[in-house]
Amino acid sequence: MEQYAIKGGNPLVGEVEIGGAKNAALPILAASVMTDETVYIENMPDVRDTNVLLKAMQNIGVMIKRRDRHSVALNASNVNNLVVEDENIKKIRASYYLIGALLGKYKRAQVALPGGCDIGCRAIDQHIKGFRALGADVRIEHGLIKTRADRLVGSHIYMDVVSVGATINVMMAATMAEGMTIIENAAKEPHVVDLANFLNSMGANIKGAGTDVIRIKGVKHLHGTEYAIIPDQIEAGTFMFAAAVTKGDVTVKNVIPKHLESITAKLLEIGCEVEEADDCIRVVASKPLVHTQVKTLPYPGFPTDMQPQITVALGMSRGTSIVTESIFENRFKYVDELTRMGASIKVEGNTAIIDGVEKYTGASISAPDLRAGAALVIAALAAEGYTLVDEIHYIERGYEDFHLKLQSLGAQIEMVESERDYSKFKLKTG
Ligand code: UD1
Image (cartoon, rainbow, N blue to C red; front, side):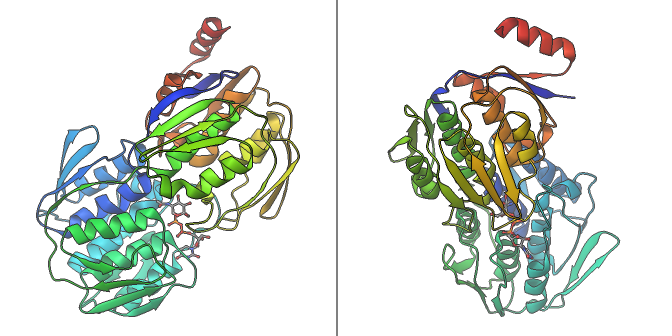
């Protein structure tokens, strides 16, 4: 079983190239089945979640050609199966994007119910409500979501909660419905906008993505396209907080600074210097970090996917900080692991009350999910001594070459597979 061995204490210094956004890549890959023509995708992250989705798509007959590590050609003219039951697909949350895409094009689909990170109850009622409003029959049977429609007809849909997944799924199905669909209380995340831009480049008619109200005029056919995925806001934010926590000086390259505004604002508040250019951001942490308060919110608020990373930083910041998680109810599970590294954090419901400590100390810990796993790695990079991080497959779901990118910034981190490897790492770095 692979683990990360880390020796903390080195400030991270240098430049790091940010890859394509996982959470934009997943719906864009799924939406590629909506045309019989070839779709070329650039800036695709090479991470486990995208690879699992590509494999599942291949299993239903989509032809997939990797042109290089980050670009892929997809052709769905020979799709021969509308039941997606791939062994691995249940493990990724975004499997359900194939429902919206296949339902839109073929008017029916059956997809295994989604998994993903265990960060709280992840209902799909808003997806189902949206599909039904478009005229589809939706059932959950034998672990599958089964949808079918004679016709999909545009509708006026009000989302009861702001949901990225439901907005995306309904937007895909509505793209090929008859007439106009209006989604109110839509999610405004950059990846929602990226998917809309992608679908429009295939001939869709979607307006308002990035605002609360999205208007979709259905079209009969979509055509092939060439499209480059936006940079990953959360990967960038993770490296920005890694700079803060290790008292480093890191420039994240190939980013869209606008997407990082809430993250930049919090880094400034806790005492970092932040310099922005057109497509890069430099974070310098030369002074001691100070406390703040933060509440996770839908975009443009502070992202829930950055909550563990900021908590790790506040755990080492002077004073008492408060972090409120308003999106997922079970997203503080990693705090137990951080406590084992010396953090002083009390969780009450959806709030963490953090008393900043001078330093963390290395320990044997386990990554409980994708983002918390990355946050614990950052804590280990700042900690005194050695840390062994287990269950790193979670981190590989969404970070490409995480340890290699960290190494290039001067981190002492290696992937190890045995006690022997770990001893060797200790000898080398001791
Ligand atoms: C996506 C992201 C995830 C991020 C989350 C919030 C992907 C693959 N994943 O997840 O990284 O943490 O957005 O930014 O893009 N909800 C309902 N009913 C529904 C759908 C959602 O009640 O039908 C609730 C959820 O339980 C949660 C909230 O709405 O409390 C937000 O969930 P949602 O935005 O749908 O998250 P995901 O799309 O699953």
